[in-house]
Image 1 (tube, one colour):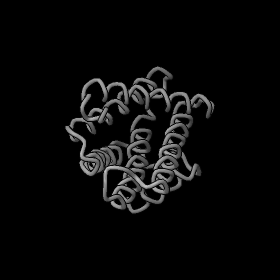
Image 2: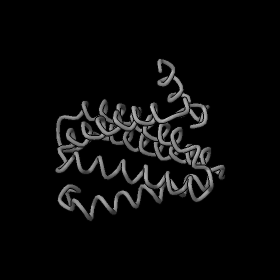
Image 3: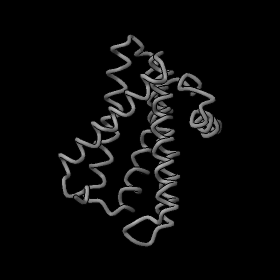
Image 4: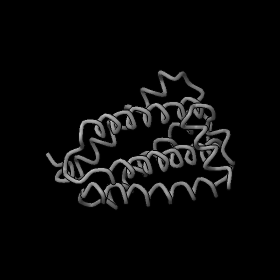
Length: 168
C-alpha cells in the first residue's frame, strides 16, 4: 500500500496505467472513500450547496460509466484497477485543487491561479482519457472523447439537480 501513491503519480505522468495498480477491491474501495472525502472538502471550500450530494453523484456517475464501458467491451475483470486509477488520480487532482483553493481569499481567482486551475482541469481530463484508453484498449482520441462526454454529462446532471449550486 506504500507504493500506491507512487503508482498513482506514475499514472498522472502517463507512465503507467490502471493495470499497474494492485488488483482487487481493497485498493478500489480505499481510493473511492478518499476521493469522496476530498471531493466534499473541495466543494465545501468552494461554498457550493449540497456539497456531499454533489460529490457523491459525480463519483457515482464516474463509477457507473466505467462499469458499463468495461462490461460493454468485455473487460469486467479490469474494473477494480480502473476504479482505483480513476479515484486515486482524482484524489491527487483533488489535493492539488484544494491547495489552489487555499490560495484564494475571495469569490474570484486571480489570473495566475485561474490559469493554473485551467491547466489542472485539462491535465485531469487527459489523465482520465489515458485511464480509459488503457482500460478499454482504445485509442487516446477515443479516451479523450469519453472523458469529455462524461465531464459534460456530469456537469449537466449536477446543474439539473442543483441549479443554485452553479451560481448562475
